[in-house]
Image (cartoon, rainbow, N blue to C red; front, side, top):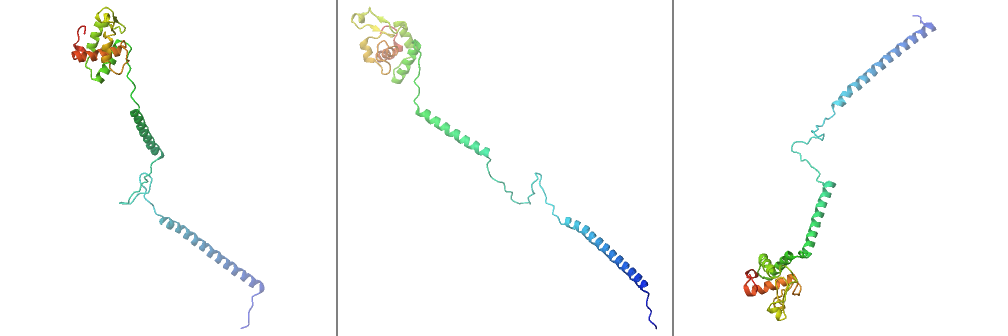
Length: 218
């Protein structure tokens, strides 16, 4: 059979059609591959999300503890707590120091009014310390009879005055008696109110048992 050759124009047209078909096939194949990749990507996302773990959270927003798990809490005092503890300790130390100083400091001397009431009360405290009996009433009663409450009263008319040793003071004591029965503490002076009272009460205690038992000149 004799050979048959297509004309050149026909061959070119055939190649062109073949090329177009091949390009179309490749384009279609690329589109299909793209769709496959897109689909694969879309399908992979849920899988990734599906593997995520959801942790339980307690009511206070902290991760929930498993049953029986030991809950560890930090045991640390706040700055405010430490300040309070320090302040209380310092207050206790200060109070202890104050108490110690108070115990070491001698008691302030008792003050008395500079009048008949004060003189009697001071004399009674001295008499109590020395074990000399007598009461406020007994002292006051005898003072009012003997001198009307005048610490400078002087008897210049009785036998003692005649002998040169007049009775003086609140309880009209003569000098020899005062010297014999003077009580240590008040001034060593016959007309000193407190010294006169305590000497007279001491004398009355030795002779009559108590100044309370004296109701007249003694």
